[in-house]
Length: 212
Ligand code: MN
Image (cartoon, rainbow, N blue to C red; front, side, top):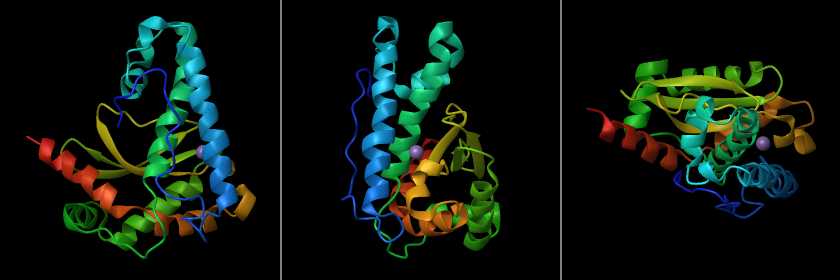
């Protein structure tokens, strides 16, 4: 899914606009997907239109090679390419709230690396709540399958050469303000019920398969 190249296209949501209710209502989700995310896609394409030599690169290649980009492209690709990457993973990582829990190898790793699901959840909630300003909280796996929580500011991504993101939560105000106003903690608490654990488990199993 990360192998697309210029021109990038807006990926449709993998569910209906009202599928994440009551945690996220259709208005929040449609503004977020159809306006905010689309703007990042449009901006990225408009930057890359000026750099034919970058048009064969995937999003991951662009984001892991920022220092090798032409100087004038570096910050706009970092911000808008990151905006595309992060939102695609965010929307793809959610599903209708269904009281799901992790299982399999991912659950085993959560217990090993965080103590328990609840201890992980507390740390993830804290990472999302304590992030100053706009950004993201992530659950990532390193190449050995060790899990960690990371925070990134703005539209930055973790080091994608070292870590495989399993999922992330958007704590920009645009992700929740229409519905939750300043209550970021309430939004994040609801978001836990939206995590698509089956997809996270598949991503994690892929990391384990690649492990030497
Ligand atoms: Mn967002």
